[in-house]
Amino acid sequence: AWRRRAQLQLTSFGCVLDAFGSYVQPLTDDFGWSRVEINIAMTINFVVYSLMGPVVGWALDKHGARITATVGLAVGAVGFGVMSLQRSLPAYYVAYAITGLAFPAATMPSGKVVSAWFGKKRGRMMGLVGAGNNFGGLIAVNISSLFARSPNYGWEYAAGMFACISATLSVLYWLVVRDQPPTDTSSAAVRQADQLTGQLEDAEGAEERTGLLESPTNT
Image (cartoon, rainbow, N blue to C red):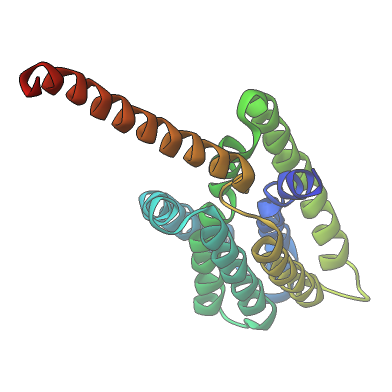
């Protein structure tokens, strides 16, 4: 039960990458970048995000949700790290491209995890994950904006903080989330024993029938 609840929580935490949008105004104030230059970064992010969709789908089928989301959150941590260190437009674009790689890998696996673990309550749990992503994204953006606009911290601190959060979530996802519920080995053993018993009974019955058919000929 605890693993189910923990997995439901972790699948909602891809929203930490939403915090990236809160650095736009502070960066404009610090570097004087125009809206056009900033929008180019957003365009790069959306293009990479769109191209990554099929790739993430393939990764989910081949490697499962656990590995895919763990890697996605780790890549997100790299993106935030680059963001905290960047001092030029090219580096800013690279940071946005990296988060474009990370975001689908961090969020798409939630559907597969919920489908595998929650059966009859699948629709309800998907609704909770979606609500968690949206609500968590709202919180992440506001917290990030609070630090990014603070004269005591700044956008570098905010980006570094979320790099640490994303890296921590990556580790937690790997430790807690499993692609499939554990199988009931005792039940499986009982089913296997029943199958073997049935096969033996069928074999014995076949031998008896063969003996009955052969007995008149012998007499």
